[in-house]
Image (cartoon, rainbow, N blue to C red):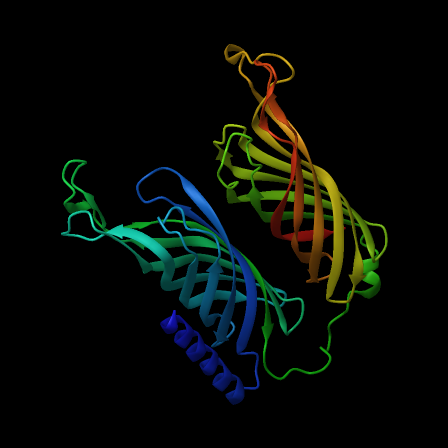
Length: 404
């Protein structure tokens, strides 16, 4: 951790010196949210971690830039056999083409993933075990899409492969022989990562941008918006009546679409649908998750950006939920069915207007899910498998919209 802090301070110091020596838009400082889907190095399952972070970019010219990025993941790292959180740092370059309102780039950034409280066996011992922080080598390769609402503001979306080098795995020879031996050599594993954020360019700019038309009247004529988005839902499962453990928390990545009708500059009605790609293998609420929210957003729209609050009732559905509708369960008929739970999405929205027709959007909020009671009627009195409960779930979304 001390080395990480020293590295971050070095990067910030370098950026400060560069800013003092340049009056152009060379430096960008940004914040972001990220979703990292970790694939197990030995088995065919995965786990998604949601994190937040920051980025510093130095633009050598309009096509080449050097970057440093740090992300923090607060959840326990199940795939990495760790009981602690993780910190990711990537340092490298991006290369591509920047146009007036948007830019497209490729990126190559080596770095590391520092994971706390990793458990592993000590080679050459008789079953000795250690728990410590480990740093895993990583390489981030992928694409970057940027939008420029103004000369100072950058809205950025990234998607790519974060390859992680997993160290050699050791374990006891057998149940009867505790001698620790090599089970698997070190190997690289590929992991999908999606990041979205906003950055601010430092440097000297004119107070007004000549030749640029503000949104104003043109934006007010655009009543309709359609958009696509990436979303991450931090699901807190309801606690079964027969369980003594804490309900599981897991991040689910998904994608979806949105339709908005702008009643005025400040009030809009919206409909949104999302589909979450991973299958849930839970006994009570399993299968795939999909979501629909329908409601309103209210706030203030400026020339370049807008800030809104939202309240949207709807539903969150699971495709495989245990059903016991007042009769003894007959497993030969299949006791599972699709089930819809009422939900309420409450939170905030930040929008950036690239042009009168194009926009980007970031949502953050609490998606409340009302789980119904599930009971087993085969005994007297009926046995409650899942009590009715309301759960709060953090949801982050980012996407692009088109106005017409």
